[in-house]
Length: 543
Image 1 (cartoon, helix red, strand yellow):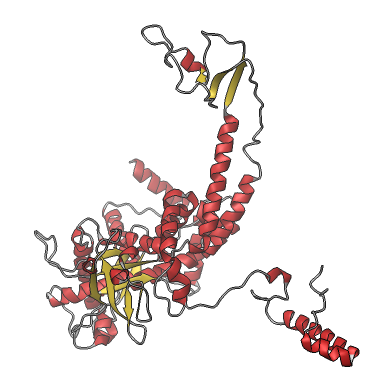
Image 2 (image 1 turned 90 degrees about the vertical axis):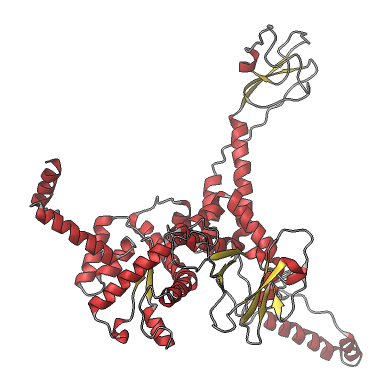
């Protein structure tokens, strides 16, 4: 029956009473009420809980706060996300692909101070930036920056970003600790705390003031974080939690960095990146495993032998190769008897003896299934769309045209750049500013007015965090495109270099300048842009 064909509503008590006096009036009441019900059900948006729509029946969504929608299922969502990452190829590919393109081997510091505001010349600003990058490299390049003394800052970036995607959020503590035999003069350490460690003390219930281990003030700002020292301990006591202030009482410095991507106002904890596709990933993995097992079984070739009982026969469930093996005493390599004479195994080249009253029936599994790959690709596209990773990037399947592959790459890098800016702003930059404060305090770096005015401190703390570039599908076409944009004033050398290669354009220019000086000193002036220059460069290399 179509939606437009609707049964008249049943008469109510008033309709029956009116019907005794005026049946026509009662019928008109019922007819007009039915028309009004149909009008209400077919106007405006089509939403869940609309009884007038057959397609919406049985769907009754409820409006809840961000915490009510996320916190009750957060533990199971984390466990499901981690299990998918460990055991599901497409889930692991998605998170690793994002991490590789956003963070790569670690975002690198490029100091960019506001020299005009600070009253510095270009040479003074360049010298200050180079010296600061040297000091930062000494601290960040070693493993003393990690509280466990096992990872460099680049490795901490990779782990923090992956942990945030995997669990929904990650917490970072920035304590000052003296260590024995330090490799740097700095005491600042970075301590990563997994999401499971943040929970309500003594497992108490959530309330308006404290939920999921975070206590907020009346404005919604964090006041305290409760860190459980042993999150998987069966019987916990109050002493198993440590109460960490969100901000220093006197300094106001941020003691804890909470890495999470908020999707709703008032959201207190983050959800794993795979949350929208948990079911799709799991079901797709089950289908893949079933198809793989079906293909394996179809590839097996087993011979069943039906004969009269033969005392010295081959015996059930053994392979042809095993029948040829003999022990030193001349007996069969399989032993005198099988552990289970009723066990029949399907295997490659198996020969199985059947009893006189037994027979077999064969079944064709029809594997591999020709429709599996198109269906897999269809679900993979949906998974990629949900987490903003194009199908081509997700499965590294660049089988379409140049234009299609280029479009997929550009769309993916919109997402990667957004996530890189988020990671740099929420993790790298706060840690750098904390380190720079200690460096200025220890007089390792000169920054006049740093503690006098927050605006001056911000001018000294300016930085750009470079990462891996998006690469090129057709280097010739894309390089010419970059040259055209620069010539037309639509781009600049640094931005085009970063877009293609990532890294530090200025450092690349300095290396190029040094190489040119060496070539000039040796009397070699190759011009690889022409055939003559290319031949000259080739002859120089051979010589």
